[in-house]
Image (cartoon, rainbow, N blue to C red; front, side):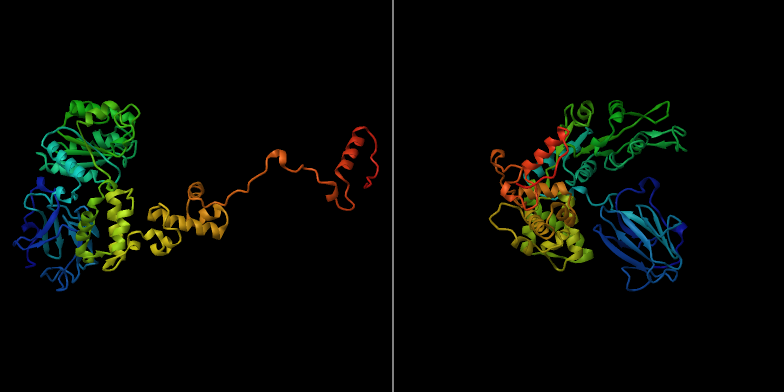
Length: 483
């Protein structure tokens, strides 16, 4: 590649096409193109022949910068202390995201970040893995709902993939060429969420130095994804309901309304009392959002998809870490685990195992936090007890802690567990010492000692009574003699 091209000669994407989709290549003016995989990976860019992306430019350092594909598809550029610096859209950066249409300048070479031919990255639908009948039926409903503009409410536990399903609905709809704006209602400070959703006028409140459009205006023509809608403060829910009914939004501090054309997809993990007066989501707002309700099953209810999910995750990590395989013990451990964090927890476990394990992954690579091997822990508990492996490991650790420290408080502190939790589980599993049986009150010995138990020189119990009586009568007690 020639280094004589200038930034002014480089063709960039049209402004309205910028920042949409996933960058799939870096393209120069002369048509030279460096393809970039959509899987998480790193590329070294520089003039050295050992780099992944080699530039024929004497103003480019041997190892100039690193281009990194992150989980989710975004592209990050990190400067490697180059001689002439790394610039994105004319701004020198040390580490910054490279969006579609941006110009990456290194030395005298300028590269344009381009997306896939259709303007988007790989469809989110390909990332929804599974063959469980209930799961496939839910996906089919989502694709049918995507063909209309009706509101959709996605219900599912944390980590089941609600955000991915929302992207599937957007990419399968007629709004696919417009923006998809995700908003985490639980991650915005309570006092700012109104401004973030609806926008504000300059001076509407302290810190409002300029006018600002909210997420509704930003998503106009596209899809607004309201994640964790159950965390939306109750006092703001009537305002959201009005916007959904009127399709008009008013900035905070504003005097006029603005029409918005936006499709709403909401999600919540608060399934308790959902659709009733006891829910944290107003009943009228629920009915407005729940035109179509999609229920994502938890991973424990579709364990038949476990192998497909794990193989897919390993394939995504293979470009950086190489292909890995699982031992039979590892497959058994994954199948017997409850996965309260669902697919997200599974992915984190796979990433941890790939990073810490060898070519063959074992159970301890997936469950590193246990800090002990499975074989040693399982040998400490009889096999006839109906406990899952995690509980058997925990019971063995608790039993050893009680034996070593003697008290519940010390044992719980050693394991880093709350004392109440430790006590409840210890009582449930019969780890506490049994209390000695007590005699009925009528059969217990009296508090006074027997006469024959009184030692030499000690007054008997009845002698002490005589002394107290003498004091009560005003008599001076004489010396008490033993009988």
